[in-house]
Image 1 (spheres, rainbow, N blue to C red):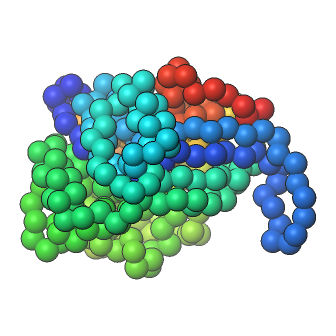
Image 2: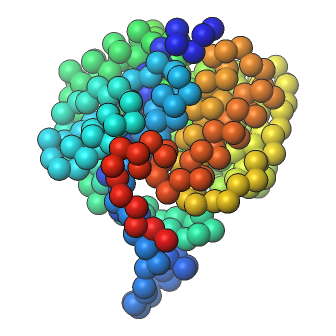
Amino acid sequence: MPLADARVAVCGPASWNHLVLLDRLPEPVPHMQFALGDLHTLGGTSAGKALHLADLGVDVTLHALLGADDDGGRVSAALDAAGVTVEAYASERTERHANLMTAAGERVSLYLATPSPAGVDTIDGVEGALADADIAVVDLSEVGAALVERQLGGGTGAPIWTDLHDYDGSAEFHEPFLRAADVVFMNDDATDDPWALMRSCLDRGPRLAVCTLGARGAIALAASGERATVAAIPVDVVDTNGAGDAFFAGFLAASLTGEGLDGCLAAGARQAVVALSSEHLHPAVAAGGVTSALR
C-alpha cells in the first residue's frame, strides 16, 4: 500500500514539557543540585508518534485533549509547524510535565497538569474518527481506555496498535489495551525475559508483539511463532525522549508498505535515530521555532 493512501489516526497525549538535564537523578533526601541545562518543548507519546509518521509520509491525524491556554497554543503551534494534522478536543487544561533526565537516558517524569475528563461527545467523536482510519493508534490515556473498552464491548473500528511502554505483564490499567489490540509495543524496563512477556501478551489476543531493548535493539514475536531481531544503529545520542515513539512510527510505516518483520524492525531502528539525534521529539519541532537550551 502506498503510504499516502494509508490513513492513520493517533489518539493520546500531547503535552508541553520542561526538560531538565542533570548529572544524576536526585536522591530522595533534601538537597541542592545544579542543572546542566533545560528546555521547554513539545512532549507526549502520541505527539511523538504523529511527528514521525508525518515525517515518513503517512497520512496521520493526531486526536488529543488540549486546553485553551498558553500551553495548548504552544503544542498546537509546534505540531502545525511540523506538518502534523491535529484534531483538538476541549479540555480545561493542557497536559504538562517536568522531566528530570540524565545523559544516560534516565528519566523521572513529574505530571504538573493533566487534561480534564473527556465527555461522552468527545469519546464519540474520537471513536468515529478512528473507525474511518486504516490503523488506529490508541495510546495509554483515559480517553484511550474508554475507546478500548468500547471495542471490547463489541464496537467496530480500525485495527488497534497500542504502546504498553514499561509493561510488567500484569498492570491492570494496561490489560484492556492489550486485549483490544492487533499489535502491541513495549520496552524491557520491567522484565528480565522480554520473549516470555511478549508470548504472554500474544496469548491474550494480539497477532504481533514488539519489544524495544534500548541500546541492544529490538525484538518481535508473531502469534504464528515467527521471531525477528534487530540491532540498534550506533548514534551519538543527544536525547532519548521520544525514541520509542519514533521506532513505533518507523515500524508502522514499513508495515503499511508490506515489509516483513525484519524490514519493519530495521525501519523502526532507523527512525529511532532521528529522535535520538535531536533534543526534541523530532527535529521538525526545532525547525518550527522552539529554541534550544540543553547542553
